[in-house]
Figure (tube, rainbow, N blue to C red):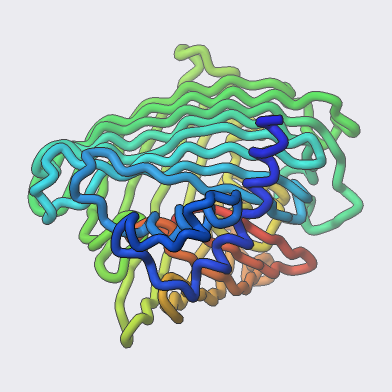
Length: 387
């Protein structure tokens, strides 16, 4: 019975959110009408969401939950659940941005399931930062081969089941102003099972282990990490994955990302991002550079295009509309290539999209995005902005 009630609650969340948009929040519990005091399930959900974005200065740790059905071109119909929390070491220090943590899970009708946790822990006075992201998923997915030309043709698509565990962590120290630097490590275990056409893997092992260690540098002048309105974020990451660390294949990679945010009018923010990832050596298929999914180039099936080097850029306009509602439109371009010397304009892929934003917590949005790529579309349900 409890599981049935949980399922009904999650399915009713979007309805409750829509119902809450036009309602004024109650100043205190005594203002709640008697009809809500009777605690039917929809009224409870509406009352809960009316209060999630209010600052709770009396709490050291503020956490809220959201979930509901969603649909995307790769995972199909699914049911997701997220928990977002913010906290501070010193509740009186409102200058330093709060630490944040998100727990997330998902299941879908195609047999996809995911569970993970990610966040940034801010130490007192923002002298140190601990970034982490750990997740596991099982996914009946597709593979087109390696290289732009293989991903271009739908006839190359083959199905397989992917098991993926990833853990990444970096410990950064402020070295002056808004600059941070420190060690970074990650672990990736990727298994391809029930492979339909193994020849597309070009003789590579279907199961690989990658352990990487290196250094990460960040320049961060954003006014918020979860919903920035102004500032810069620049990240440079270099990791080495030698065979003597137990890696299936020995290689290294460099990741670069730069994003800028600027408020152009009341409630309107222009956000731009460029990123690149370049791999060197004997790179396993699961660690090649790619794009798509919920982060970069929304609209493309994640992993369809993969190669040693990847580049992408996105320009997005984010506009607050009314109360806790907002919208976003974006355009982007990306490509993959075996080396920078092989870059070609004819292999640059476009994407466009539109999205809805709902302020779940203060400076933390739930986003529903619809992306359009070349011959592909995708719906995305996620927490926080794409970049």
